[in-house]
Image (tube, rainbow, N blue to C red; front, side, top):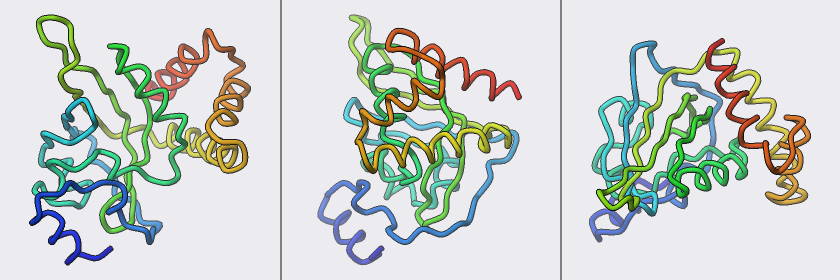
Length: 193
């Protein structure tokens, strides 16, 4: 990552995105403290409009760099696309999302979170933004989800997102009608520990 290019981009009033994320990954995990909560808010396009101090510390980007950036700047390549499709399908339909997410840090490292994302509605029921709260996930949940995500990412490499969707249904013993419910049940069971 070129710090000068990022500074020039920000100075020109441009937004950062996953294209500005580090390309060189390192196997260095930063772990959330038990009592910490990450809070962020995005507009309807996924651009960050608020982030708390813990988010800044965990992501490794400055608040100045994060505000206005697309949230996908912290998307780790170990995360399957199908997870974000489920996320966006739910919140754009005014539902909540719960899930485990491996995020990418500015230094190329990573951190895991248990994420809760909800749409924010105006008085007419229109989505005006999205709010996300994240906390430390149980280690057992990370182990289980790491294996599932690895399989889904592999499926996507050869067959795209439709292949990972079919594999997710198979792993959950689910069908089109109950795959989301079974995914959410797995997430809740893992979060309980």
